[in-house]
Image 1 (spheres, rainbow, N blue to C red):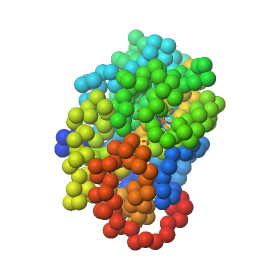
Image 2 (image 1 turned 90 degrees about the horizontal axis):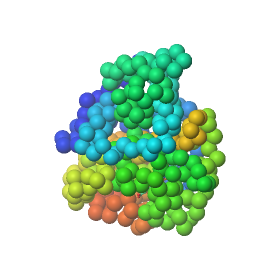
Image 3 (image 1 turned 180 degrees about the vertical axis):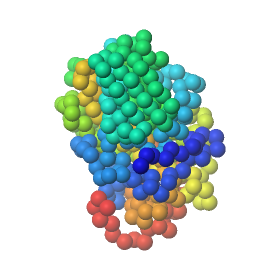
Image 4 (image 1 turned 135 degrees about the vertical axis):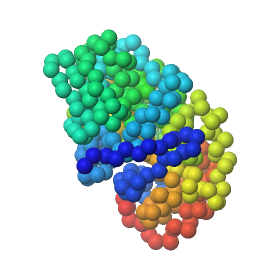
Length: 343
Ligand code: HEM
């Protein structure tokens, strides 16, 4: 059966919600009662049916509305999508990866027909049926990266590999947790990770970069990252801080369950075949606390993680203004029972 796409907003009246099914498949990121940065990278292999790991590129009920939100961001701020001139080939690589993946995983929604370099792409949820010549920029309305990522949930960075480092030389970033592509474009792995506390000292980034440099085509990997967001707002960019930053002061014991969201990023890493670049899709999943506590072990665990979170992480993730309110609210869902690792 096909996916039923919801009509909803991630701004203004914030009508975004998760269905029961979406709650159950939410990628809850904590496998212990405490959280600290680590090189938490694992093979991006197929997971259970219905889970966010079932397919290499997950499409869910929020797809159509997320794409509408991306179009709004790009209209207001075209610099959210940038590709340095040497990254066009990597853009074609990405277009191929996403089209093949979507058409294979969701044939009821997407079709790709290839006859040599003559391609036809059908995207039913967005009403697109385009023919183009693979490799010929003149045959698409946008560059290949922008064309396909306007049709793909999550942000995408494309990293060029040279001089033993990775360089953020292309990307489309409209659903980010407070960092800017326009600021980071052209930076290397250590430079763009500059603001992250504690992880440099722990050697996390040195080990993570080594791992990435050896990433092989056909063996993608993944990790989860998380933060919290007030309202189901996708675009929490520094560029728009004036629109969402003040929301952090609006959390009360009465509204915290409805307004505060756990924001989880499913980050995956794929080596691209022609360009040898790496693409880094950052897929954002949002869940309000009221939805999250319908899975009792999640409510219990989030309560404990927030209580024990190192102050540097509380500060970096921007939780300081409302963490105590969230902990107090979540405490009613923590019966003190021991939790199992991974559970
Ligand atoms: C944060 C990009 C890979 C760990 C960040 C930030 C960016 C970023 C832009 C935000 C920094 C800021 O505050 O301005 C990328 C890109 C990657 C990549 C493009 C592609 C290669 C990794 C890997 C790890 C990692 C492999 C593995 C440990 C982290 C951590 C944070 C972070 C721990 C802090 C997140 C938080 O607390 O919310 N990354 N990253 N990154 N990254 Fe990466």
